[in-house]
Length: 218
Ligand SMILES: [Fe+2]
Image (cartoon, rainbow, N blue to C red; front, side, top):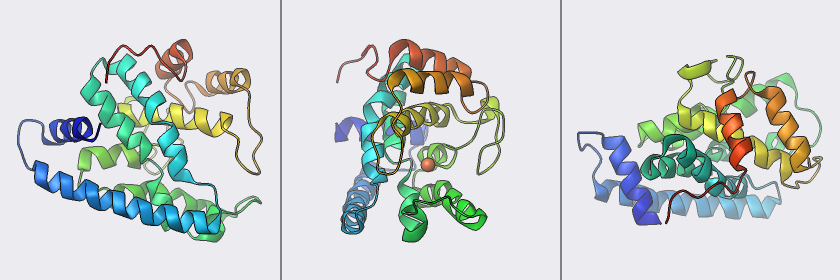
């Protein structure tokens, strides 16, 4: 899988030129894995909701959805890996903001929202990839963050991640959150189609579900 991921990243980041070499990418991914292990250890120590596991859970649903939309396994892998790391920037948030059970203050909400930019900075070695992370909280109607992009200004991969990550956040049991049934979660996605989410992407997700049609083989 790592080789396939590397091939997908190199192909999409480099386009027709070759400014990132396989060696550079391999070193970067190895350092990234180390950093993620450090973050995981830190998070486990503090017993807080592990956003990295949330990312890992949506890898496959994102791969399925992205493949259904793009019909390109390379592109789908690229988007799925960005989905896995979409919340990585949260490691820079103050623990009291990340763990807070009560409603966040205005200042804390502003701080919390910075995780999209922190994630982009963390992955800046790969500009096309980190762009998907930066924009995963943009809304289809332009009311999201950090750049208030709307409609097709938002990268396709970011719009796909917005749907799969929201599905997981709604349906996966978490402390202090009410878990939605799949039926309730579907209603919520439909309700926000055209507002928060790209309606075409919601339609496809509702058609294939989180397990997808698996039109590809690994
Ligand atoms: Fe996020």
